[in-house]
Length: 71
Image 1 (cartoon, rainbow, N blue to C red):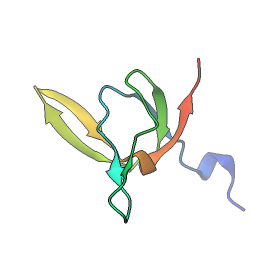
Image 2 (tube, rainbow, N blue to C red):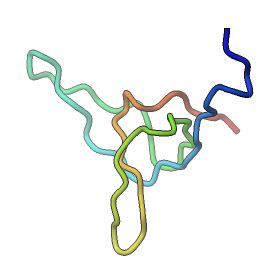
Image 3 (cartoon, rainbow, N blue to C red):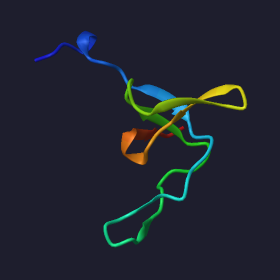
């Protein structure tokens, strides 16, 4: 058993862009289930940080998203 104080809390961010999705083993397109403006939770070490136009952004796969926060 691990106490709550020892577990990592997920980070939260806002989706600013969404790609077309990925392809399954048969080549069929699987659309992304997120949209621009969604607030999402993701793991502390998920994704890859990159600079776009001088702004640091985090690029994530949909699999890295833990959940969508509803208002």
